[in-house]
Length: 332
Ligand code: NDP
Image 1 (tube, rainbow, N blue to C red):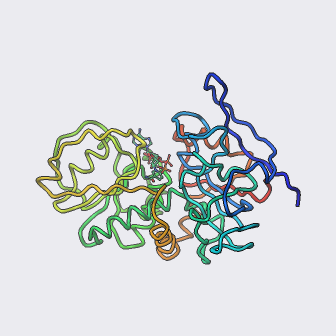
Image 2: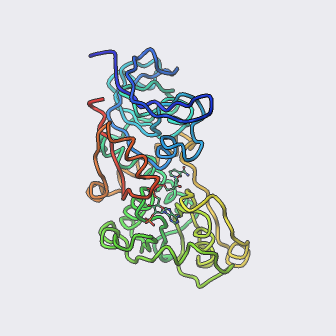
Image 3: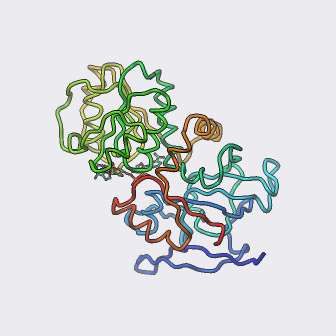
């Protein structure tokens, strides 16, 4: 095996102008870590799109190999937890932002960040789930911890055609929830129904400034959108319900009032995937193995190669991507 591999390197010049290049690297170029991995699969998340396009300042170390998710086989390990040949999975922990990530043939990472790939999930399936799907599962687990069950009533999922939204729909419907999908792409209604959505609403119903409280329409929510959408979701949540908030596709503001909290006892549950504890992430991946229909996952997944990553990153920022994208890295 050649020591050289391809990587996408994002750099910036003295004027902070960003450029993206495909370069050849060697193992000795990699950043520090106790586990060296041959990358087999990665994916393109919204955050990877931000890193490659430079639309938001997610990169904290220059130059950077983006890619916040990866699966690979261990080629060398200084950790007792992992041995050569193990299939490992990485989501987040600042990889692709502050530490070189998945858009390279090889990666060197800290063992604390890694978990073993569950045996029932292939590398490409895991990347089809990716941080988006793992975050969906964290949202569902947050609602469950709060005590929400299917008999409480419908659950709204915002950003329904996105990665987080589409996998949340598949998981929630499999668990028996009545899922209301909120989307700006009405043309994708049949697709959302095939994932398990029982009802579709137009996201315009939620994206404008609304009243402090509205009709009680759902018992819970998974919100990937933030801003007015989250405020309106909260304002229309039933008494005692809860909303798991994980995203900011509309905006990071939250122009809401306290009324749903103090008059209806509604709870707002924050969900972070990046720094989630190892035990929580392992549990989330075990639940994904059990509660996500992989046939549905396949329907929402597009497979691309290493050379398509940069254009796909632009498309995700332009809102042109439906569902999940996986990158087969076996030829990088
Ligand atoms: P995607 O780009 O795949 O999906 C976002 C979806 O949001 C779009 O498909 C669209 O859905 C909807 N949307 C986009 N723009 C707007 C807008 N202006 N107003 C209302 N809705 C909009 O992203 P992901 O699903 O991967 O991620 C969703 C969000 O979650 C992102 O903000 C991401 O940064 C965040 N995230 C957070 C994590 C965490 O740890 N907390 C982890 C992973 C993601 P439709 O076309 O159906 O309307």
